[in-house]
Amino acid sequence: MSIKCAFLFPGQGSQAVGMGEDFFNHSDIAKQMVADATQRTDIDFEKLLFIENDDLEKTEFTQPAILLVSAIAHKLFEDAMPIKPVYALGHSLGEFSALVSVGAIDAIDAVELVNLRGKLMAKACAGQDVGMMVSLGLDDEVVEKICETQREAGLKVWPVNYNAAGQIVIAGIKPDLEKLEPILKEAKARRAMLLNMSVASHCPLLESATAPLVEKLSEVLRDEFIAPVVSNVTAEKYSTKAEALELLPKQLVSPVLYKQSIAKFDDEVDCYVEFGHGGVLKGLNRRATKKPHFVVSDMESLANAIEEISKLG
Image (cartoon, rainbow, N blue to C red; front, side, top):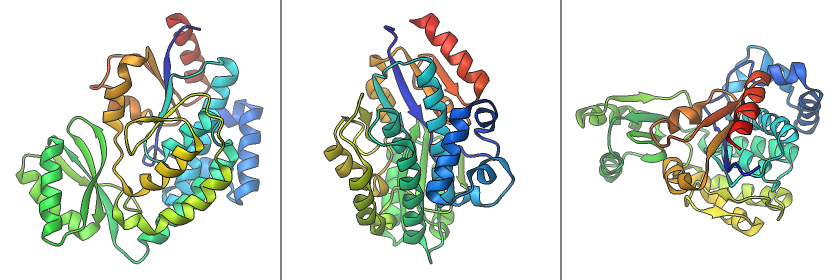
């Protein structure tokens, strides 16, 4: 096909009990991937994904659950429509799902990897009252300046996710984030709200997690990229194991340049295909691009995406 697609993968915050269940109920491949992931990690993914529980909100479980569902969605799409993306892009955790989609990591190896990543992040944040806050309606420079000024005053707060125009997520110590809320509102933020997050992602508080992650990455990464991945750290493409080994540890402590990545490469694609639950990235992309955006989250949306993309080609 001549259609040029970018493959997109969501991160933490997209999770929900029941995600992936339709795939599981209708696909032997999905059943096998769930079974393989369970065997590898000793996490009961059927229980984690399909039965009400508290573990799904804990980062060491959230991350492998989201990645597994995204990998299943991509595998079923790939089997039905063997299309090579122009590039793959993930939001935070989603960068690891993106690596799966281009062949740089085996899916079950990646489930194990991000389970470890979640544990390392939780350990780095242990004993600290950490959190994340979303700011809506302010320019990047305003939020950056506010955070810089407050860090100079002793607060631990950093802008970490550049999601969309006027939407930035800030990470840090929760009481410091709470002090930030009235300051952001005084600057005319439409909203400043704490998020339901158990870690403070993409900031210096996670420095201790980087070295152990490198060791595991070295074991599981392959130099077999069928397409480039866009780095959250640089908003540039990479396509080698060596580059991934340099960039992925930095991703833990560096801001996610999601909106910059979409803006930079939008001209290269005809459409976006998002794999996983929730359509979070479709929401972020609404004001950033006019290109068609398909979400593959269950069997019906899989069939719809295949049909509509075929028409574009």
